[in-house]
Length: 327
Ligand SMILES: [Fe+2]
Ligand SMILES: [Fe+2]
Image (tube, rainbow, N blue to C red; front, side, top):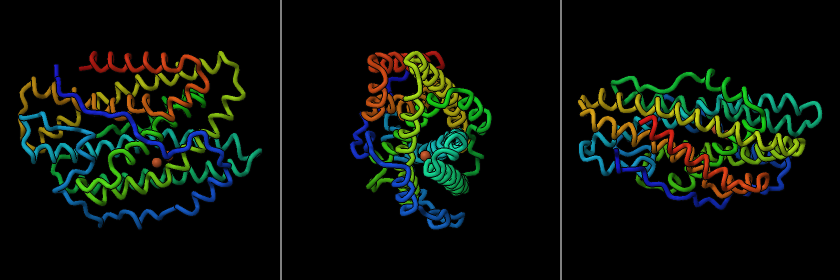
């Protein structure tokens, strides 16, 4: 069993006002002001500095892996950064589907909500294209075709088969951790590639409005529900989280295979198992468990559940159990 677990501190974010009083109209105004053009952020002629990490080392601390030298650790950072972008691109697929459904529900009765949600969709589609461009640039430095989960539609269909409040709760989770990753680890980090940092900054700038739209929509839907229905939101959310644990396990295995191919490393079976487990744990800690500890996420749950802490602790234990089972 690997005792080198990814280090993860509790999110420090205090700048996202979850109990916000912004209206859809105000959120549209901010969105219009901060909106950026894709070609102004990244084109296929942009360049990364491949001598630097893309994601902060703290996201995937490889220091303890003495069987990898520094250049192999750098390559692995780039491989993981490539799949990190893909995981967000993949998540945005179902988020777009959800926002389209919400816009469809809202536009007859609330034109501002419809406008805010359609801008939300357009921005997410732009983010997906930005991440695709960044992945192309990363790939250009490597011979091995980097493997990522590409079943976007299947995953999106699976998530969207759940109720809208549960899908929104998962979206709130992911959009909070996206911002927390930027604020806690990427912003002002001199140790990472400046373009990669800038991409995540531009993403964060538009995501700040998304989380507020999510919460307006979540509150609207929950207000119409009976308590028994509200209980089912967390059950559905938990099922989707556990599905993510399994999906991320597949991604971790692909990452280690790509590292071996790119570096011509023939890892021992033991080292390979250790690295896959480390990678899977890092994904689950950074993308899933990080959200459970996010103060704003905890606050949203405590507003609707008197036993929210018990629920989150139980889900946290289930995630750990699944990680152990899969590795
Ligand atoms: Fe996004
Ligand atoms: Fe978003």
